Image 1: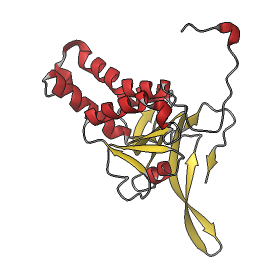
Image 2: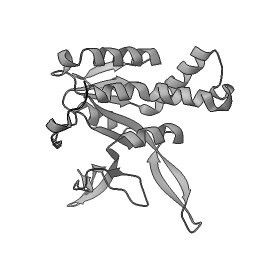
Image 3: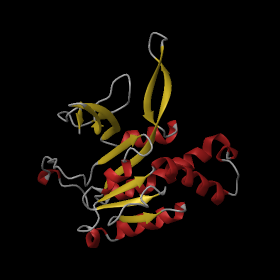
Image 4: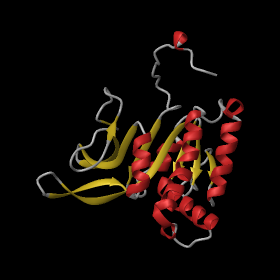
Length: 227
């Protein structure tokens, strides 16, 4: 159906995570998957085993890329029937999802390494396959919650000075694809806080970054961090 511009109304942004896209990253065992499990109507697409200890959570194991393709097909086809049960898909982790996707392309093309396909054609196949399911889910109205590990990388500023920054552990190619899609890049970390005569470790979500770590949001009025 063609768009009727005469009936088009300004969009309104609600507080639900459905229809929104977030990349969350942090150190191992900081509680990324646990945090995702607390989201209302979430399905954890478990490309890793981090959801094993979570009780009462919808978890779909992703041992092969085909498992993910089958899951996307069911979610898209049955959106209306599932809307009261599933609204957010947590990809845990997107790092491992990319590896499985690359393995799927290599097996499909009968090669050992994606570089064997000439003129960068293998990477184009990989990019298209990797993002196709995420786009299908997005246009079906689901929210996407990408989970990644953290790492420290060295960068060079405009004056030629090197500096280190904590960033998602995704390789550059899939990171650039996900970065274009997400509304928020959120860093989860523990901070020691002095409370009386003792030090307590508290977790914070950072929505604004600095030279130490990467974070950012398209939401102009979001707070820099929240406990």
